[in-house]
Image 1 (cartoon, rainbow, N blue to C red):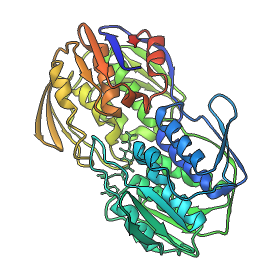
Image 2 (cartoon, rainbow, N blue to C red; image 1 turned 90 degrees about the horizontal axis):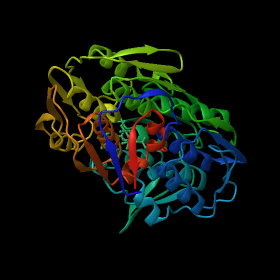
Image 3 (cartoon, rainbow, N blue to C red; image 1 turned 90 degrees about the vertical axis):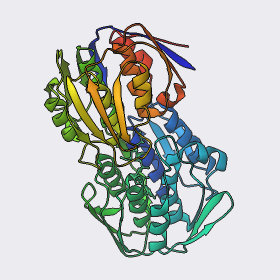
Image 4 (spheres, rainbow, N blue to C red; image 1 turned 180 degrees about the horizontal axis):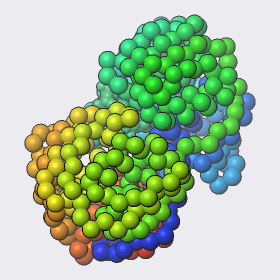
Length: 417
Ligand code: EPZ
């Protein structure tokens, strides 16, 4: 599937179910490496990133079998290698999450140099510092990094910069370390709490996940269990913007609005009309939007993964808004694609743009630069005049299951070929 062809100007209606969270499923699948016995993980999104991680985990010797449609049976009793396949690992930056579990369970791990990506260099200094703090030795080889430790030792570790996967991989490693580990200035994403709850159900002793201080008491071994992946808050926010931009009434179900408090406040400040239930959000037709300044911030701040859709929404607001993205240095470059289709966005520096609106958008041919910007280009195509053709849709299918089928179910006119 190389490109999407989108007819603009269609109204949407109906219900769309949110899938399991990509950024939770990736970590929980990695965490099964720590366990003995058979795990059953359900509500797994059927997306490329998950498929890639499954290939990497299978390559290590983990047995993975389909259970029902969106659930897997996973048994890590017979892992027979501790080196992540270089070719597979390079394609999925998130595969670095496996480093902690493999190191903790087997005393060594070798990971390929994880490439950067369009949104930023994506360094891994925090992972190196963290594993060293847990007592691991570190060796930089030509194409890989190797960590070794007979037995990890609990430590006190302060993250000089908040890192989501840095927090997750150290929390996982610490579950089998000797003694107690205290992680300070830890990330607080809901996906981290979900990971800790799964690990604790397997016998880990983790306290404070979801806050900035996490305390992990090492245990001897972890026993497999079952868990259901939490709803994808980023998919939820993307659909909220989609419903508002298309002035449609759509009901977004199977979601958890409490994971999106900051984002929903900014949507309301922008004039977006919503009906919010316990596990659904309904968008209501909104004629005018107000300009709102946004700065992305680690959870519970405004999610960087929803910056792109919100920036698009601001192109339809009456006035000027400042979008500040301090977390990634390359995450605002997609705005040149919005300007190509009629937006009026000025880049002040790689971390800040000023959006002037409202502007009419016109269908053009554009390539999807990265996952979240790609999804945003789909939303732009839904409101642009005429036809929008989006290339490089692989990027979008990394993180949104059956996005064309699900949006067409709401009345969108998207052709994939
Ligand atoms: C996670 O990436 C998410 N990915 C990202 O979602 C998300 O944008 C990001 O967290 C921030 O919320 C997954 O969970 C798989 P970080 P992660 O480590 O953990 C710097 C998406 O679209 N840093 O929290 O890799 C880093 O460069 C993806 O689903 C270091 O300097 O991000 C960034 O500036 C995109 N050294 C900042 O920290 C390190 O060793 C935050 O990055 C690690 C990170």
